[in-house]
Every structure is written in structure tokens, then in C-alpha cells.
Length: 184
Image 1 (cartoon, one colour):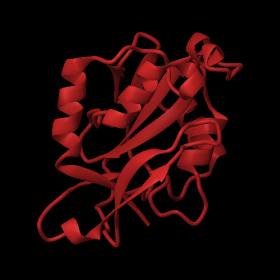
Image 2 (cartoon, one colour):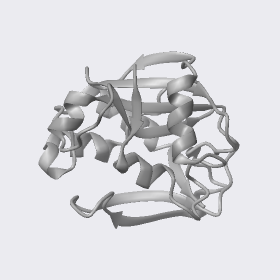
Image 3 (tube, helix red, strand yellow):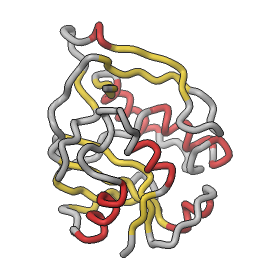
């Protein structure tokens, strides 16, 4: 099985000057690692075209989500943002001034070649990286509710065209009511 890093993932996972991205590893080293080192586990994603490869973190990348507590609630910020120029801005929130622990795992989100082609990205590999979760446990962090909604809107709005799963959405809300991402 061959894996490539999509431009979408490259621009989000390897932003320079951002401490909440993948650290101590170039995009080329990351892609090579995924192709040379077998994952610890392979989890089913939210749709048949999506796989999650669980790798032990070989970098100094920190956990992406942190619990919201009374002690850190004042560090939460929010804004309307789009992930790319073609997407509509949506409300997002994050911590500023918080330093989470180094992640134990990198959970790499892969889409198969056919799905990426449907979304307008042609790759010369079996799978393309579309994201990565930096976690303390070797499990998937629930997709954010707004991402689930965007996916249900379809590829023309930056999603994947997968209908909303109400139970998965409720689990996502339960998690993200108590957690937030951080920016460094």
C-alpha cells in the first residue's frame, strides 16, 4: 500500500511558526515514515473510503485537544474561519496560552484514491493523507461537529458527501463540549 501527503494536509499539518502542527519532521520525512513503518493499528474511519493509521509518535508534537477546566476556560478564543479559500468560514474555538503534553500517538487520516479524485485531488498512490490527530491514546478523536456538517454538505462546500450520522454527531458534541484544540 502506498501513501502520499496531499497538499491539503501538507498546508495544515506543517505550517511553519505554529507549535500545534507536526514538529521535528519535514513533510517528506513524514510521508516516508508512513510508507516504511507499519502502523500499530488500523482503524475504520467514518466512511468506507477512510482509514486511520495509528503510529507511536516519533516527534515532539503535542496533543491537539485538551480538556476544558475552570482553570483554563479563560484561555478559550473563537473566530469564524475557513480551512481553505474555497470553503465557507465556520465558528471555531481554541485555547491560546495552553501547553498540552507531548502526544503519545499520531493517528493519520487517510482517504482512498477514488474519494480524493471525487473531491478534486488526483494522487499517484493508494491513499492520501488528509489529516492527523495527535493523541494521548491510540484512538480516534471524534470529528468536530462542524466538520461532520461540512462533510454532509458535499464536496462543493469542502466536504466529502457523507450524510450526517446523528449518533456519531451526538458523541462528537459530548467530546467537544469538554475539549478544545489549542494554538501555539
